[in-house]
Image 1: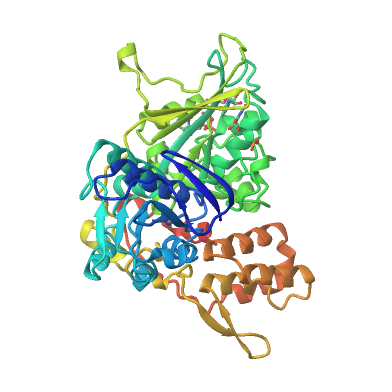
Image 2: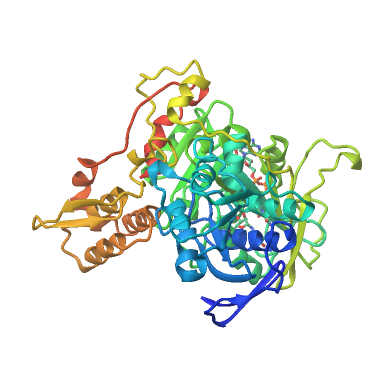
Length: 550
Ligand SMILES: NC(=O)C1=CN([C@@H]2O[C@H](COP(=O)(O)OP(=O)(O)OC[C@H]3O[C@@H](n4cnc5c(N)ncnc54)[C@H](OP(=O)(O)O)[C@@H]3O)[C@@H](O)[C@H]2O)C=CC1
Ligand SMILES: Nc1c(N[C@@H]2O[C@H](COP(=O)(O)O)[C@@H](O)[C@H]2O)[nH]c(=O)[nH]c1=O
């Protein structure tokens, strides 16, 4: 941990610190909103470090400040199931935690009885907790706030107990950090970001359709990072035909979003980079009945096909929501982007403006026909940011305000009540518990260690069922690479990371686990709860749910 010199809104790191440094002489009290806001913004900034890794869970950051204005410790959640941000901050603050204030961007989420964050705060003697926003999931909302208060800790929630313009701005940073889960819970579609690179004269390709490259190498590296923050990347059929893109996140990070192609005609090339699934999978969403023979060809390559009665961006987003997707990155051309904007599913826009002019009357632009005839109809972006990356300018902003939530992600049980057409005993749909559900401990991804016997009958501890499950793909295979895989999976920091490692080796080295396939399919320890129900128009697509998860 470095010495933090903390100015409002900025921070930089130099050498080691301990004991904690002074932020400013001012004593922290409830009226010092500028300082409180700065700490909360810092907690949000820390939380953002693990964007893409925590999905489908929120991002948490924590700052511990002493009553005299020292920052004593910081922490952020790397992934669900790893050490909570609050605990990390307390450990780094040591004895300075006593009577200190903890600033958290988000109320701790007490998933199925895990009180670690709350207990750590109480046991460390934290006297006050400032919460950027309450937990967005209804069944977790308010639990930690109540628990802390019942233990005599003062809890101040931004917007409730602390109100002012500067506090409101700090609260906004907390909303932004967890925009995907907020959107998902309030709007029931994933948080969607439309990104395009255009020339100064507003073209995303030449008249010929050639587009590589408009933006600089540095900008494109940044795009890899942005991809890594999302669960899925979407392009239209024409971009596949024209660009033959890879759509991988080549930033050296761990998280790789699934690639999705929207194509009505399925008039797509037989050979394409997107059909190479060695790094990450691809889903093609299409119109029901389109080119069955081509569907078969894609399926033989392992590409998943999902048919829709009406293929449009909203249906696809609702479908992805149902499959647990929190955030989507749109990298399509103007035809599909116009359709997505018109459907109201795009929340944020990232325009990369390169200082180049290409001209061309027929050269495409980033957004096609929206049917507007007067400038007064233009869509104004909100909270616009400008950032120079190499020679290019990144302009970003929101197309619609983030919902100010009292959101609901209904638990599986509640769904029946919400949709009376739901009949719990239909066989075509299989649901997995999410760890955030009230009975989320049934999920493989639940952070509950298990003990299982190895080949010699000795018991070993695995951090979660998912760790054990992924490792079983390679256990017993007589190959040093398989042994290494097992060790890497076993030491993975989170169940999601264990899944990433297991799935990626499985894709890249399918021969490695051939002998183990049958064993993997029969999972006697599998705690995933399956059941089925009919959700009107959605039932046609749920049968494919398994494949997304495996
Ligand atoms: N500079 C940049 O950032 C980018 C540039 N480009 C460039 O843009 C050009 C391609 O743009 P564009 O032709 O607009 O391609 P799109 O990526 O927008 O693809 C359009 C296609 O999407 C499919 N589609 C499926 N559902 C819908 C729907 N509801 N509404 C609209 N489309 C749907 C159709 O595929 P189908 O015909 O298969 O049925 C349609 O032809 C290329 O030259 C490419 O290089 C592309 C992406 C980014
Ligand atoms: N031309 C263009 C972009 N185009 C987008 O990137 C895709 C190619 O990704 P990949 O094959 O993974 O490198 C392409 O199909 C289109 O969606 N992006 C940019 O950041 N800058 C650019 O100049």
